[in-house]
Length: 257
Image 1 (cartoon, rainbow, N blue to C red):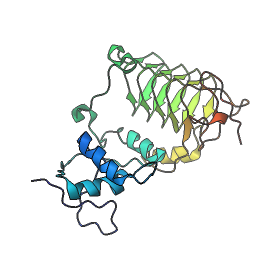
Image 2 (image 1 turned 120 degrees about the vertical axis):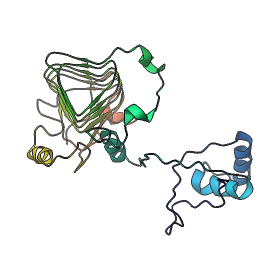
Image 3 (image 1 turned 45 degrees about the horizontal axis):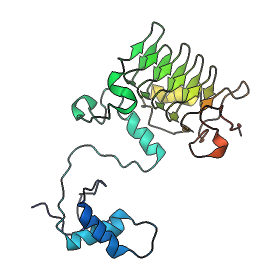
Image 4 (image 1 turned 135 degrees about the vertical axis):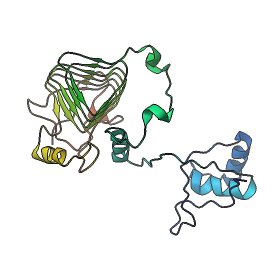
């Protein structure tokens, strides 16, 4: 019948190889009644610990067996590796056959033209979305719609969200970047052709494998060259919500440590 008779969150000795993927569909009234029963003046509840077991005991709860690919993205590193696992000749998910749809009304995605790769562009082992304009070099990266990579700019092992601009001569390595960010001309973040990177490439590693030194960039920031040098990798250079990281439309205020 598919009815759930017991629910255990992360048990030490799992009775089955089935897991909860954390996607639940509730009857609104039933959920509200369960929350009222649990109202102990607390600010919040843990869904898997406080809500689901009680509903299994008092309601008819059924499960849907999902047989496809699933990732548990608990950290930024998990998110990064999951995105880069889409690259290569044998990706974890066949996006063409996956059937996942996105919100085409957001930022007028439905009206974005096909990606443009100019005469000087070099792109390899990357996902490049509609509306992207590439004149520089892109390697092992995931680019959301509207990303611009100017001539002589390099983007490697990175995830760039919507409408990011990488200006001429900028060089990004292992960057996870929110929307509407501008990397000014000459900005360098992360390693540039380091020996470790070259050896990893020789071993055939994908971008998400091996040691990570991710640099996180918050939404709407303008990141410029760091005193003619480069920004050290492996830090939250400009994370959203941190006052010291800068403000939208302003140059990044973080100093190199």
